[in-house]
Structure formats: C-alpha cells, structure tokens
Amino acid sequence: MSLTIRHPEIIEIARRDGKVTVEGLAEHFGVTLQTIRRDLADLAEAGRLERVHGGAVLPSGVTNIGYEDRRGLNADAKAAIATACAAEIPNDCSVFLNIGTSTEAVAEKMLAHRNILAVTNNINVATTLAKNPDCQIVLAGGTLRRSDGGLVGDLTTRTIRHFKFDIAVIGCSALDDEGDILDFDMQEVGVTRAIIDQARRIFLVADHSKFLRNAPVRVATLTDLDAFFTDRSLPDAFVRRCAEHRVDLHVAGGAPD
Image (cartoon, rainbow, N blue to C red):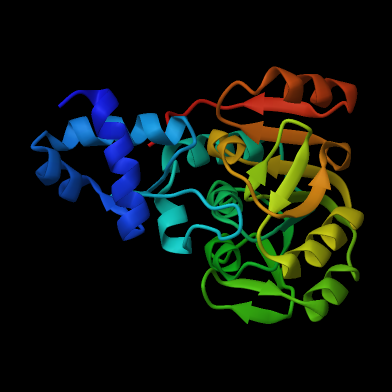
C-alpha cells in the first residue's frame, strides 16, 4: 500500500478511535513498526496528528494532550532547549518556573546552579530542584491540578505578586506566526500574567511542535519576552517579529521524537 493511501486512512482511524498506536497500525497495514513511525512523524510534521507515547492523537484547539503523553513528546528537543536556557540563568539569582513539561526539563538542568531562589507553581519542578542543596524553593499556593501537578487560582496569583524575580521561565501550549503565546486553561492566564509582571526578564521555552498547534486562550505576546528558546529554525514572520521586539532567539540542537 502506498504512503499516500495510508495517510488518509490513518487519519480516519484516529477520528474513529480517538487514538492510533504504532503496533495497531503496523498490524492493520501489514508493514513494519519503523514504517508506521515514519508515517506518524510525517503526519505530525504536517500538523494533522500529534505524537504521543506509542502512537498519535488528533490535534485539538480546545483540549490539551494528557500530561503523561506530553512528558514523552519531543523529549530530546526539550532537553536541548532546557540546556540552552539553563546556561543563560546565572548563579546567585531568583527565578520562577511555571507549569509545563518544558519548564520541568529546565529544572533538571539547574541542579548544579548555586545560590538560587526558585519560586514555582509546579510541584514537579519543586521536587526536581529539591535535589539541589544550594537552591531555596518556594511553592506558590493555590488549587492543585492533579493532572499535571500545577497550582492555579487566585491564591497562586497573590503569592506570586509578593516577589520580584530576576528571571521567569515560562512554557506554553501553542504559538502563532503573529507572536501570540497561547494556552488551554483560562485559570492559568492570571497566573502567567502575574509571573510576567513580577519578573525582570522573561524566557519562553517551547519546541517546534508548538507552531503546529492551536489553543484558545491568549496568554502573552512577543512584546512580553526577552528570550525565546526552541529547537528548530522559526517561521520567517516570527523571526521578523522577534527582531522588531528585540527578543533574543536561541535555537538548540535536538531531533524530534
């Protein structure tokens, strides 16, 4: 069966079942697992599917991918981005890391930093940074979102406004060519705005897949950023807007899954 015939049927199976698996598709089409992985990578690159562990799902503009699936998505790219971002965070500073698997990757790369005050509304970030004995950790209070260990709500926002951070590291769910930073959870908007207001410098960490996604809530824009860390060359329109707003671009190495 030719590749051009397989792709529409893969999309149709995803619509019917809600998710496709590499093993299931390989058996269905009578091809190798490697062939199906290439098919899913091509469909993900075209924005028609989103890769998750062991398969793919249809992209959604209103619902985020589950946390466990997001953790494994583009893991190599996130690690490369995190390394580049952590290298720009000096010792002897205060930093905020918000909710997201990309910010969690940055926390992993900060275990050798010295004399750091880290504030976060992400329990996973706090757990990771607890391994660094030279890092003081403050958890912003709020309502626990069990799905990903995030803390959200008015209490979180009020806690954040007690601080002035040297650097804030934020993630997002989607980006568009106009430079809008998008997310799914409206409760996060007030929290993220407070983070931006209370930080001297804002670093955004987001891999290339965020340009293939859409989300309904506008969180911030390029004008709010000081630096953007990603893993691939950016769309020309986005690069021009970064230059206009004096946003430093850092393109890290790292192949997508």
